[in-house]
Image (cartoon, rainbow, N blue to C red; front, side):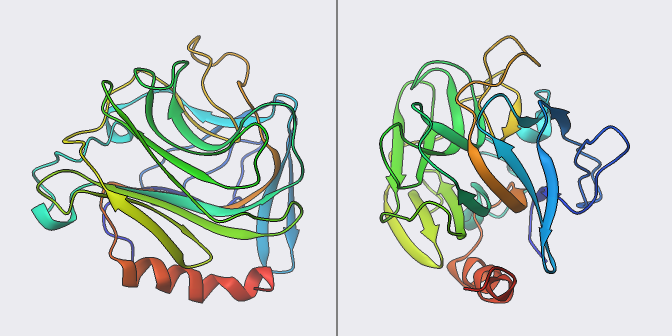
Length: 237
């Protein structure tokens, strides 16, 4: 029921090589890297990243290069929405990337990300045009606890906002970006791209991820709230 869905990786379906299957119907399988472990919490499936090179990745392709200028989407809802349930274990001595399409460099290399900073316990959404970078930050969180984190951006002319939702609580600001950067970065869950394409994980996360998704659409607040309300019981929230 998510408009513009480009990938849905619940972490329940994985193949004989450990690759995470996309249940959107668009077959965007994520390649298994390192040695993360699939597990479950009652009915909630998840993948456990150890912060030492684990990741899921997919090589750059047009469907992942969401720019916010897609004319086949109604103007009012052009943009991007992505997120997951995440449970960060600890600080690792580096930033920890939960979902990212980003190379090195905090402006020119970034397209869109959710990450936790080096010494923080907040989740930060990043959006870049290649010339300018915008961020939005959640309230503080607790290590070892599950949180529902969703990032959303829409361009000038289509609402022009950036937002991040933490357990349904929205933090937002106006956006000055007209489009997102079109990078050659891999799309990754659990780490960021090194720029070498399929190479080692950069700034990997230590923690758990479940029900990850990506949409070429700025989902309305009511839809994001509905996802939170309909899945929270799985994580005892």
